Length: 251
Image 1 (tube, rainbow, N blue to C red):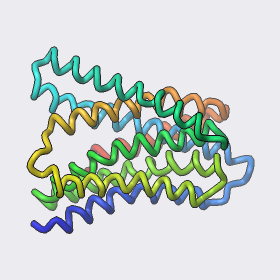
Image 2 (cartoon, rainbow, N blue to C red; image 1 turned 120 degrees about the vertical axis):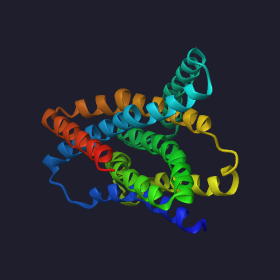
Image 3 (cartoon, rainbow, N blue to C red; image 1 turned 60 degrees about the vertical axis):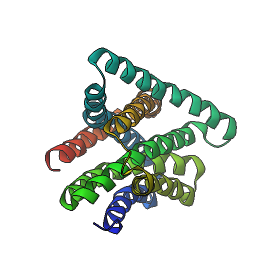
Image 4 (cartoon, rainbow, N blue to C red; image 1 turned 135 degrees about the vertical axis):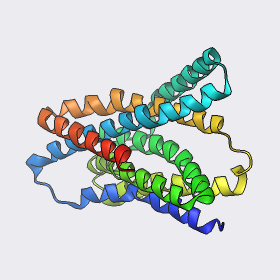
């Protein structure tokens, strides 16, 4: 099969993240801005935790435990998961040193961008390889990826826009995050088709799960609670859960 269609499918799936950034172009009344930010933050954290628990960790654990014995596989998984947790704190320190804007929101946006880039990279590899082998399977996977990439785009664009006031900056960082998916597809085509293993993908996914869960609990949730808009936190949770259910039961 030609590599063009699998690359195209991965690119469309990845850049669907940008669709999430379009919410910043709606003009909100000043009294509704905090409600909107609260909803987006709570939606984002549910999506990140949900994807990690229902997709990344089970898929990664199966690959790792298949490769190693039970005890060794659990130890390796916990070690890589812990590295993902610690990465949030290390990245946080770097951002604090280099940023002078509305630090909390800007940090959330950049952390989300980095976490989702790492998440999108193996997704691009998986989308390419599955499409390369079976176009129908690749399309099914890409639609599922698009479904959760849109709220992921919201999690990047909204904090960065309200921290910097720049729509261009928010869309640019969302776009960069989405590019990680076709980049993963290109890497898979050029270098990894004959060398990539389920275990390698599993280790990446466990790392990303640790990073995303920590980001959600340690950063997104406290920031959402700071706005004291509890109804919109619950609304974000409900919408996030609905999107996750659609992702699993429809696709």
